[in-house]
Amino acid sequence: MCTGMPTTYAADLARLRAGTTTHEALVETFLGRIEAENERLNALLSVCAEDARAQARALDALQAAGSLNLDTMPLAGMVVAVKDNLSSEGHALTCGSRMLADFRALYTATAVQRLVEAGAIVIGKANCDEFAMGSSNETSYFGPARNPHDPERVPGGSSGGSAAAVAAGFCHAALGSDTGGSIRQPAAFCGVVGLKPTYGRVSRFGLVAFASSFDCVGPLAHTVEELAWMLEAMAGADANDMTSAYEPVPPYAVDLNKGVGGLRIGLPREYFADGLDPVVRDRVEDEAARLEALGAILVDVSLPTTDLGIATYYVLTTAEASSNLARFDGVRYGHRAALAPGASLDDQYLASRTEGFGAEVKRRILLGTYVLSAGYYDAYYEQAQRVRTLIRRDFEAVFEQCDVLLTPATPTAPFRLGSNVDDPLAMYLSDVYTVSANLAGVPGLVLPTRHRLPEDHEAAGLPVGVQLLGRWFDEATLLRVGRALEG
Image (tube, rainbow, N blue to C red; front, side, top):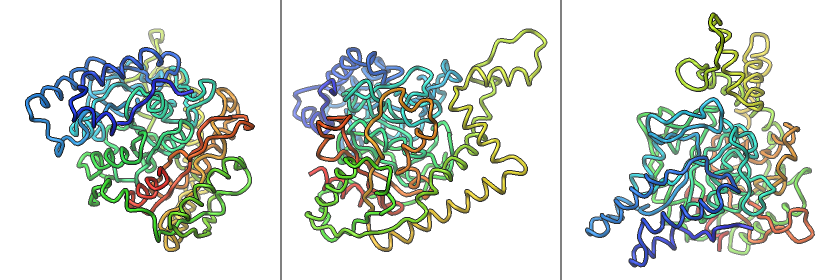
């Protein structure tokens, strides 16, 4: 079962305002939980204990002087973990890889910086699949993170450490990245809430690139309200990221309790087809019935290109990974193989990359290089780009019929550690309900259903996630529907 008796940020913020605790005391509580349980769960790869204590003391000093302005520091005292592919100056930036095992960040990612400026306290760097390539957190060079609800099962990937850290009570919230479901699938498996914003809503500056036209930075937390607070602090254009969008950032928390009366909730039939665990289906359909009871209108809709999502995703993302990871050559930074004098530069590249990258990263680089190569570019890469356009058009059409889509987050319950490691296709299919959102660029929210898996299920007692997908830059409606499902 979950350890650490996690508390929400809202509850601890009330205690801070009442003067019954301090920022430093909160940090010590989290550090105590980490010390007691992290060795077992492997959720955090490094702990920023002294920096966290220093941030907490500074906040306590401001509060004692009456200078802590919650209008300018609305996240004061929120303790967060940061996925270890997001840079934080002076701290480890491993991406879960041997290639960067000893590397320390030279600057801070915009999303992290904006949280810190809003008063958040960074307590550690979270485990992740190597270079965010994985769906179980088992490709990490530093060993897998484990699901706090059942340590023999995966927490999901690639942001598995972030989700596990929140679920285990190591922090109030965490940052992850989502390229094809890497925030949403771990949120579902660990029973927390997670948001993939619209592509461009949150700056990618300081995020180590996997697939640049897919990657999104987003939050994980215990409640939808906490996601709203974090997104408002992080979102907005950034001169350091030309793909960040110059779209207004609304006050996301204002309309959270507005209810769902009159909203049209689409149920895409392709997401409820063969391959979905019947009990997971039942849990998601229960949530649809709850929304209907709250005044929403259920609409049967279709996304015809859904079955092309996985193939399209793995052509395009591997092509982008092949290009992005070319920089890790053992010359300027990263792992450098020790070779005998007289070895050629090609020998150095080959040895450093062979030693530095794990099997899954190599697989994706090879696949990406193949689809970009002469003779195959038209047949694979260009064709996949055309299908990506069709997938986006499907979403454009469906959002003329409804306001939000409700779908399963994952086809199964959290699977056992090691069960899919030797079957890449089975691992890839665990993202079947999440990749299309990244292909289209739409936002997605995952939260736990009210009821866990029943006693007669092989994963009895584990959480089940439900996914909400929305229009581009309409995270506010997603969060509003999510809040209604929280009850």
